Length: 336
Image 1 (tube, one colour):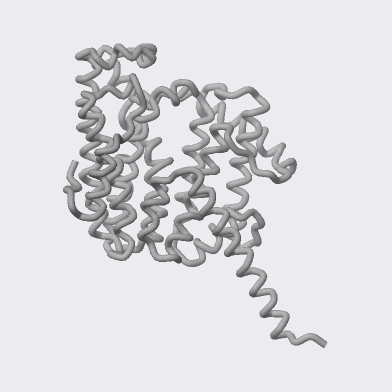
Image 2 (tube, rainbow, N blue to C red; image 1 turned 90 degrees about the vertical axis):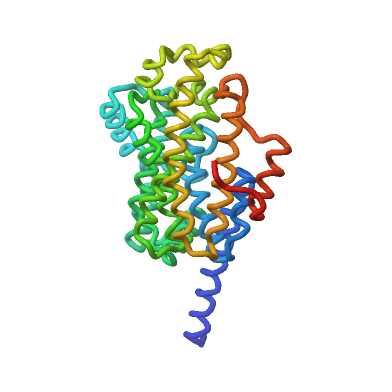
């Protein structure tokens, strides 16, 4: 007759093994997707680092679903009817057809519903089976990450299933909040903080980072039918959407004036976002600080180019990477 204590130990060890393997899967996803994120995470202690990998893998795969770069290798047929209803509702809400053919649209909506289904299971304490959600469930048992923030992130991903054209900066800001500020709000629960103002500054940090991303990805986003730059602001400077495909636009006074305006707004969000750093647990502060350094350097590069983000994607050259490395060591100023 087996010992009840031995059986319990075996079940515990099996669960621990599954969780450890799930975290390793999330780490691999992070490593394959972003070397810059991996570098910034290396300053975290082991427990926080694993949880950040879980959160990043969740966000990465949700984004990959929308872009058509990944689909879960599981049977989702039980979600077909619900996905069909959701696809119709999304089109009605946005008064638009999806950017993708019907079958692809259905698959992407269905996969995002699968993400929602797993979040529901985690919230109700039910068992999950996919590595990303096994790791995420363990993370949410350790840190007070709000599942509502993760659901809002998925809503932002759904926005990208449609041709995107935002009219105002406030419209664009709302999108940035969904896909970036929510991530920051989740991360600070892992990093740790005591001042409630940290959440406000985490929101601003997310807006700043996403506004920089918008500048980096203009060409790629337009190829997917997405224009995140506010149309009213472009029109204010005499710029039409169609001109964004013309690299010569970057040399015009109209574009350079628009970019000065855009960069000013970005810096306002950056200034408010930077106030987050001293509010975080000192043991976890280095990771977000490094991410801010990278994006601040990208912003400097845009200024050096006089706002030309149309002729080539903005990246950091060798010397600027050296400067970034010195900043990470505290040997260079962080200010933008």
